Amino acid sequence: MDIRLEKRLAPRRNTMIEATVVFDGGRSRMRCIIRNLSDSGAKLEVASVANIPRTFDLVVGKVRPQPCIVVWRAVKELGVQFVGAPASR
Image 1 (tube, rainbow, N blue to C red):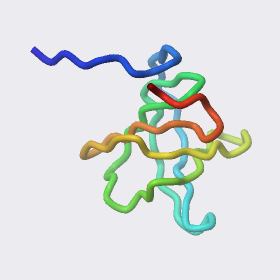
Image 2: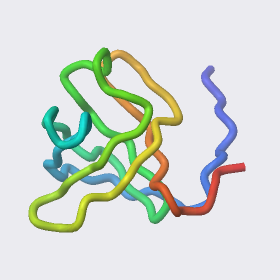
Image 3: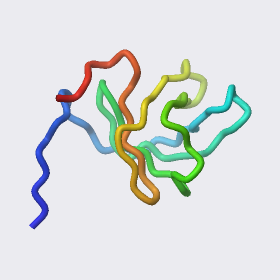
Image 4: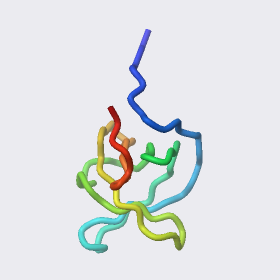
């Protein structure tokens, strides 16, 4: 049985939002799906986490880019905290 302690300050809601991970001064882009989302962070599904840096911008449509910090990685998923959002405990 897998029991994980919940460390998020804000509850997440399940989503299927198409977005883009942007890094390297805007020169590198990778498509992703936002799988769940809260006011403080998100879980992203990507083709591979291999070349994604610790910090990047998350862009959804024509909305202002959201700076992110990677807090965990799996083979094809990233957990990110939004820069400026309350830190998890």
